[in-house]
Amino acid sequence: MSIYESLLREIRALLIVDAHEHLAPEKVRLSLKPDVCFLFSHYTVNDLISAGCRPWGITARERWKLIDFLRNTSIPLEERFKVIEPYIKYIKYGTYYRALKIALKEVYGYDEVNWSNYKEISDKMKEENKPGIYDKILVEKCRAKYVLPQWSELDFEKKYMRPVVWVNKLAEIKDFTGLKIKCREEGFDVRSLDDYLNYLDFKLDQWKKRGVVGLKTVSMPYREPPSFDKADRVFRKGLTSFPLDSSERDLLFIFIREKLIELAGKKDLVVAVHAGVWDDFRQLDPRHNIPLFQKYPETKFDLYHMGMPWVRDTAFIAKNYHNVYLNLCWSHIVSSHMTVSGLLEYFDIVPINKIIAFGGDYLVYSFEKVVGHLRIAEENIAQVLSKLVEEKRISSLNEALEVARMLFYENPVKIYGLE
Image (cartoon, rainbow, N blue to C red; front, side, top):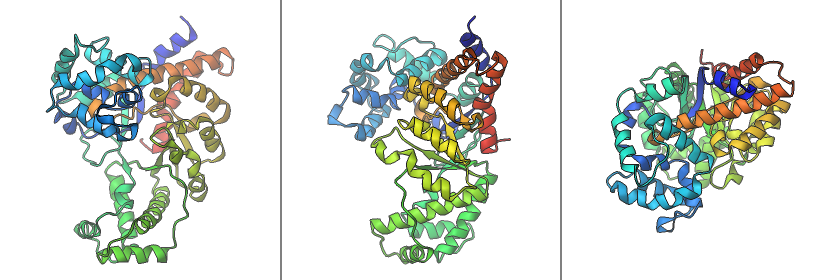
């Protein structure tokens, strides 16, 4: 048995932390009527559109039109599958589809999806969609001790779910009347920005008691926040029900977002940062965040997705800033080969206690694909570590396994304070 095969076998027995998902509480999944089209409605849908599946002339930026169509079970299954089936042959070699294929086999027992079995697979998915499905897939098949979901609710009945909350939930104010009512219900009479900042302090403490381990934001071109006085004037204007224009809303968002990042550092909450990959990814360049990394040295930042395609840039960011960690969530299915080559360079550049190996990054509609993503991640980590053993940079199989345990489990546990 080769070093790679031996290491892969051992890695597939390790406990893991699934360090990023978009999962709702299980009750949301159980309320759905999943079918085979759900499996194509997340990530794989991008490849379908890229390959030419453009009903109604949609573009990649309008992907939600196709996503909603694929998840709309009031439309006959045959009609939905007929739209995507001709394009499967074009996307089947991509990593998004490979995760789907692995999950299809491991969870439902099918090698492929086609005209002869798509209805049968759909029936199987409905049959398996019952209480305990999260435990079956995430705990039993994926060996996850902790899962870090990002969702609008915090009502996770599963104790292994440790939420990361979208920062916009507090930083983006669209309805000041609703804000005043909500704050009043929680004991805060908000009449100024200072009052709201006190509420934010209270809210983060409350969330942390409920198991929240971090806040999530998105990389964006850096803008220096306004002074407190200027932000307070805009906030008071909103409170008096005068409509804010887009520049005023942006100004207030930037101020509050930075205050939350600062507060997160004081309360030992991680700030997770989406970077790269999506839509006009030029706006998501991980380098935009360097001023934040410099400005808030006591805040831990978890930089997502290797910043793809800026994989090398993220390595040097993590090397140069003690408070920046690198999370390979999503990366393995964006490109398996880019992840492997990038991770080899990470080992050259970055201390290994700063790297998190895995996050499935799936929505509740097709979360069974977490299994497929994890299998690819296991292969990628085994491939990188076996190469380092062969090069004598890692002295033994046992040492390589210890490194794998750090990447999959010990690092995220320590970074996010899970134990």
